[in-house]
Amino acid sequence: DVDHQKADWVSIHEKICQLLVPVRTSLPFLIPEEERKHGVEQLVKRQKYIIDLTYSTAQKFLWDGKHEKAMPAALHALRFSIEVYGSSSVQLVPAYLLLAEACIGVGHHLQASKYLSQAQWIVLRTPDCSAAVQHRLHRSLGLLCAAEGNFEQALYHLANDIYLASSTFGLKSIETSGGCFHMANVFFRQNKMDIADSLYAEVTDIWHAFLTKSVQTQEQIHKSRAEKSPFTEDKEISEDTEAQQAEATQVLNAVLDIREQALKQQPGETARVLHALAMLYYLVMDLSKAYEMGTKAFDLLKQLPQQESLEAIGRLLKLINSKP
Image 1 (cartoon, rainbow, N blue to C red):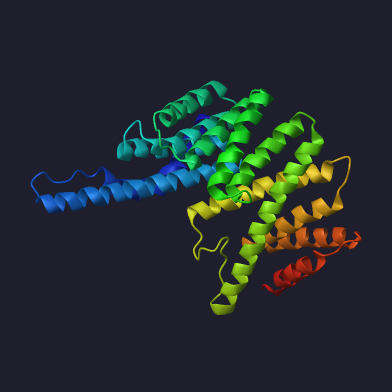
Image 2 (image 1 turned 90 degrees about the vertical axis):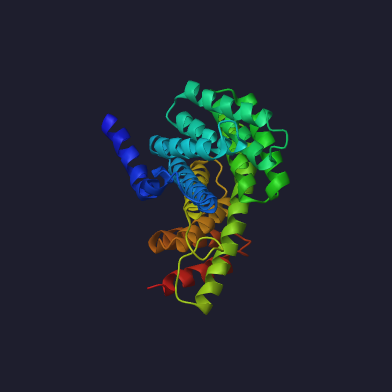
């Protein structure tokens, strides 16, 4: 266990080790003011880069279900956030939430509660705190309540999460879908299957639309330039994009498991999740999985009277087969 923890620290430290050297180097005392100012600006820039890197690394670990691995990266994100922004800045909230979710994942609910209390205290002291930050706080609070079996309180927080996320990013946004997914899980645990089912369908639809657009973007890029594998409209795969990929993989596979194990089978809904997963795996160039999911979706849809998605899946399968 200790060895694992050590390995986790080593893994994030290796990522940021070279970045730490200039950050830890003191500025010379006797230098012109302009040079000093430039040095400070460069230092802050590097520190912010480390915050972004460690945050997105921790986020990806969380979506991959590797909660212990997320902890060191999240602690680094918090530490550098404090250095850059001070100990009571709203900029610390994302790191506190990561730490809380990592603790929830390993069953350390008391520690998670402490991190969330810190985040809540900061949000309460920030009158103009953005809805984007508040919705994440409510999500983390909802996850803790759900983990503790306090489902009503979990639903309260997740409802706030969805409301705030949709008001900021839009009702059909990826950001909003996360709250819907977690709310569906709570209803699922309460055995309120009809509500859970409709929420899982909503989550699937949001990801399906997002991935459809991403595939179209991918094809446009392919027509105009050398082959690449972007997941979003960005031309390079960023740390944020990797976290997004991990989220999509985790969420859609979870929904697929629920669909496939349900007593009342809904082939249309199952096919939609499979189609979304096929697009996801195609975009990340896992072509064998993409083909497997796409073929399953195609076979399911062939059995249904309404087959409007068959053409889209057929086109995707052709794209997959056209890859070397």
